[in-house]
Amino acid sequence: MAPSSLLRSSFRAALRVAQQQPNRTWMRAGQTALYSTGKGSGSGLGDDDILDAMMAGMESDFKVPAPATPEPAAASTSEPAAASTENAVDPEPTHVNKPVDIEKRLQALMPEFLSYGGQLAPKSKSALNDNPKSRDLTIAQLLAAGLHLGHSTSLWNVASMPFVFGVREGISIINLEHTITHLRRACTVTKAVARQGGIILFIGTRDGMENVTIDAAKSCSSYYVASKWCPGTITNAQEIVGPHTPRLPGAKAGDLAKPFRPDLVIVLNPIENMIAIKEATRFNIPTIAITDTDVDPRIVSYPIPGNDDSVRGVELVAKVLAEAAKEGNELAAAASVERTKKRIEGRVGRMNAWSARA
Image (cartoon, rainbow, N blue to C red; front, top):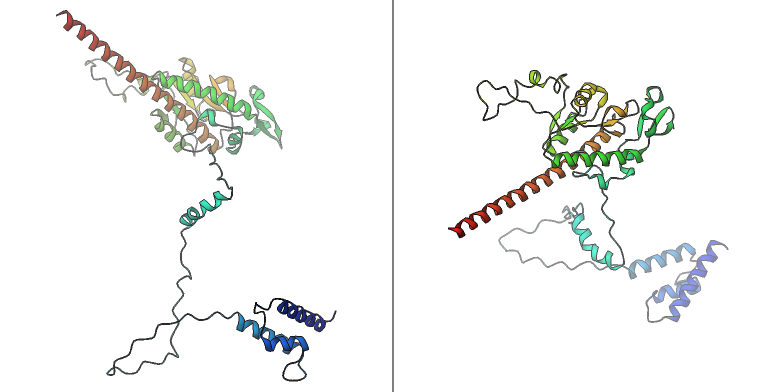
């Protein structure tokens, strides 16, 4: 169909709708005559003229009236006439570049959203939050921390074979099912030592792990070695740390300071701290360490198979162990309060019994 025929058929359809609904102002009378005959008061009108007439009618029908402006107050006769407004500049609209408070807007829309059956998404539990717990850990979180990446097969230690899932492009992949199991067991041991009031020592001397080691130890009120392990700190403690140990309040003049040995040693990078592990083993001190595929897991009491080169993974393991020690400290404090309470109640009972006899 030619464009002119299509345009005329559209005008006729609009005319029929206007005749069927006379109450609605679809077009003006002059435009109706023009659309129905294709001619107006003049002769030889083409499709362009018809289209111009239609657009002019639409503009007049849908024109928004301007808001009424208040009349200016009468000027004083002594003041000069008002200046011309030809060069006046319109004020900037107030809605342009106006900041919007997103939180308030979302709170305002929330009731309407919930009325439609909408639901809020549950908050995700991150493994790297401030208080991670071993019972809340998942394999996906360990995978995100990079604990599954082992060393190259050329550095593979045969003793770590039970913890290896497979090989991918020459890299040993650690089975995270064993990792999460051994990590939870290590947390149980750490919690038990802290509950008995034992001394826990964190060792992490690799570059980039200093802050991780210090933060983990401070969060559970424990001790740490973040720079370098001095050989003989445990086996020859009297000579290494004895002069730096504060003397007890009740010590006599000739008594030597007695250094205390840790009750649990947690090693975050065992390759660089083999001497510390051997010293702890010699004095039957339990050890916990992150054992990569290039480490023999039998050298420590409670190995945790994982990637010890990933700072993110080491941070996750350190925080989980520190949280377990913190829980043990809280249980120890609660038990101490309960014992003190029972002692006081016993003394009160004995005093009451003595007073009754008297």
